[in-house]
Image (tube, rainbow, N blue to C red; front, side, top):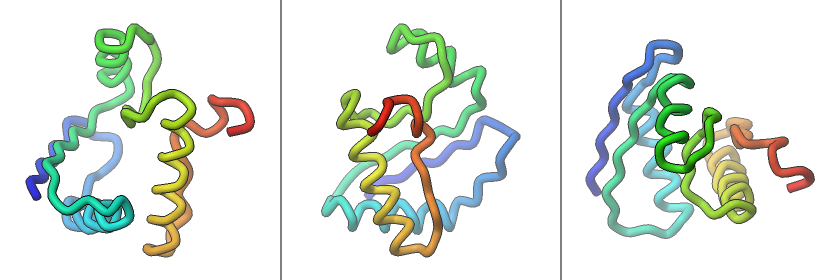
Length: 101
């Protein structure tokens, strides 16, 4: 497993050790044995710029790369299971954007 974490924003402190632990839990939930992952945390202004360039959408996003409806369903399922395993209550950042999903 290769994991790179970069924090390019200053609004929310990023604690790398707990993040690595949660990523390992998500890896187990998904049943993935080996992977390379890069996480870059940016502010809304920068993510909106990236979204405009790569997806032609001029809005901030959480940048999960699942297809439209499947994006929300998969995101919610993984967050539900991660919440169950870690005792946290997690909701997709995209909640409310896709009607009754």
